[in-house]
Image 1 (cartoon, rainbow, N blue to C red):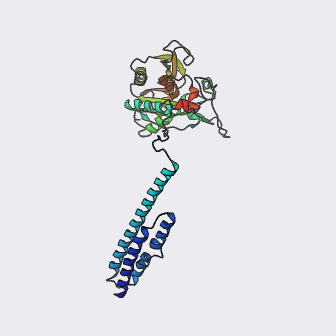
Image 2 (tube, rainbow, N blue to C red):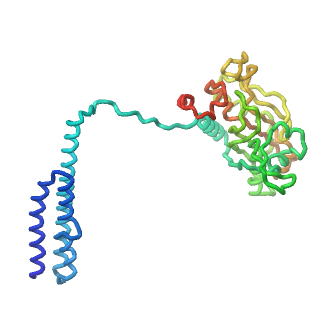
Image 3 (cartoon, rainbow, N blue to C red):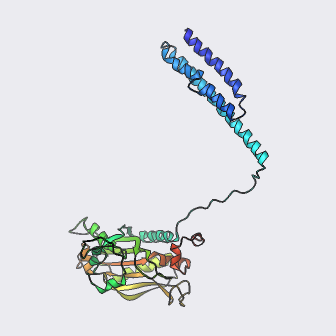
Length: 357
């Protein structure tokens, strides 16, 4: 009983002393002294907590409760004193330094998406509405997927249209590693992955494949050595060229408005037959011809019906299935959308350009 009463009396005395000393906190030094005296491991509070284990069982919860209440009281005293001290220090600082708190703060510059990314996301949303799914494919490809399976055999002259970066990896024979020159290898990878779900009766395919491609080209207002491309592929029974034209024309009108003009020009690509270039009328010159378009129309990309060899290489029987494919540059779309007259602006990292979007 005596030990219990002694602890309670010490806590009571400590409480009175703390109330007195808290009123004397006027600076950081006196605040630190208060904390050391009343809240440190050598304080009365700490001693009372340690003494609990030597008490009889009936007194332990009583002393424990008293210690907890005392700790809460001391902590509250200390926090109130610190808050009051900081308020006094702020008032003293404002009066001595003559800080004009009515001045507006420095504006925070918010980050935003690159215009290339903005257009790409809008395109993905448009094709998603049409039922296409996004399929990711690799940027470092084999010659087999980048060319051979797309009907570009080794030595084919059409390879000259795609100046290629070859990886310095020895002993790969006719299948070297390359930086992909187009997103079209994604066609083979997507078809094979989807056909593998049911090889005897492959499901239809409707995918878009976004990503960066690389070509060793002369850089000018319309060409860069790397650029974003968006590949589209639809494979199924009864798909025709009319479906391709309808899909791309609808995309253009959703992106540029109902008055957007498009055209298809006969062309040649080894992996499609028949093939066509897809153009949109230049919004910069309204079809009159300028330095951006060169003739009133801006080439967006290639398109066509998937070649039977490509269908076969993807795991689809060309006697049963047909399909269309397209691929275009995302920066070309952005140039049309925003009236940008030089594709190199996308890579300059000039905030005067980027902050416009």
